[in-house]
Length: 71
Image 1 (cartoon, rainbow, N blue to C red):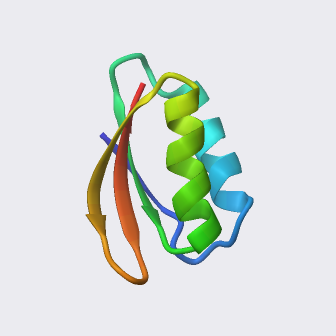
Image 2 (image 1 turned 135 degrees about the vertical axis):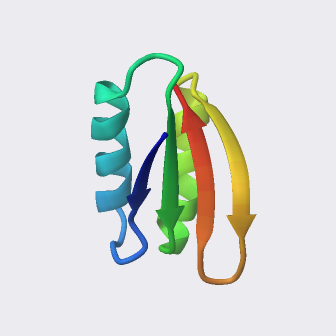
């Protein structure tokens, strides 16, 4: 599992980084993503699901979200 902390970044940077990392990730591997930007918290999981990745929510509160994206 690979972890990327994108909590200090605003949209669209987190989505771009997730796209790039998922391209490099081997099939069946999981990317753990930490987000804090409200736009990214909505856009990243939606994009991943739309593109056929399995997304699972690990944690979400007012300020942060943690998700796993499996390729």
